[in-house]
Image (cartoon, rainbow, N blue to C red; front, side, top):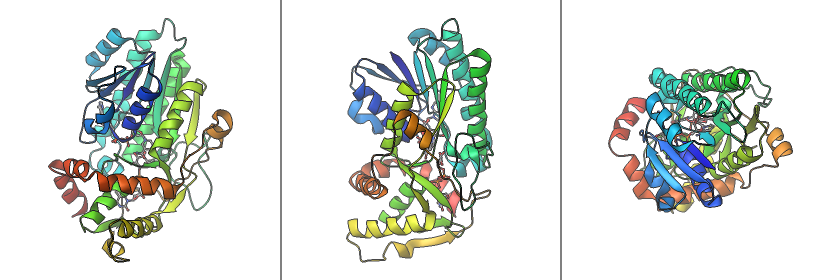
Length: 347
Ligand code: NAD
Ligand code: DAU
């Protein structure tokens, strides 16, 4: 099998690439990534010389280039993760999200269709999406695969739009697809603009921890390697035309999560108790901030036998330890452009 993984130099993509390269020596894995600010080849240093792995630098919105790749390599499967992924950036620059997340997905769908529409047998287009397409929950309830789409941020709207196109290609052209909608991931190699790595980095550097609004927003956190395992399971066992929700069954209010993180960081850094908690600063809320996300993951558990393998405590411990032992990685990604993003977002 030849498999194209898009966005494989990013956070989740790099874990998916590693898992597939190591677990399936008979597959050839092509990692297509534009290496935007969020893409980092250092994430894949350990597998770069594997014979079944090839990195291709390129942009999914470049139609001629994407078509030529399909002509050359005839990818049997696509696992599509490339995206602009940060909600705050989508509020400042929504068009960039439409370009990559909607147009980029369309270009991949068209290339896949052109390549295989004479015979889709044993082919698969796997679209990796998010629970944010469902909008916001109140204090109770869970997102199921039947929850109506109701996206609130430009990021969520762009992902919802791309999901609709994938589904439409399934209905109209019989393109064999699966979609998964996952909750918040955390773990090693996440770019420090997202809550957990941003706060770990700020604690290390004794900088304020900017909690949006009153901090009473809830997210359902999943360890990134468990997401990668779920993608493997759905890619191989999921049914065409199906959507599967993936979640951590692990809800935390932001403020409680941040306090737990502060406690663990004080222990790891051997700082007196409450040192990090004093850095918490309540700042202006994110516009259109979704109150709560929480996933009902019973379909993927019952139908495909997947469930999270690590507890939040274990996953967070591994994550903190990774950032502390990889300070060079953190320093590299937080130099240059990151400084101006940080000033602009939080000043
Ligand atoms: P990320 O921002 O860390 O990585 C995105 C990757 O895509 C980067 O390597 C970047 O260089 C690449 N990319 C961006 N634009 C590109 C383009 N035009 N052409 C080619 N490559 C491009 O994102 P992530 O957090 O790893 O998310 C990966 C996917 O999973 C996204 O589709 C996202 O919507 C989805 N998702 C993320 C989460 C989460 O919590 N992070 C949860 C659910 C779903
Ligand atoms: O739910 C899945 C989604 O999770 C993915 O699709 C997105 O790609 C991913 O970025 C993530 O979106 P969130 O907006 O939930 O993640 P983020 O880490 O940006 O924020 C988590 C919560 O923390 C959210 O309620 C906003 C809050 N927050 C975030 C930042 C960056 C703060 O309070 N302060 C901050 O500085």
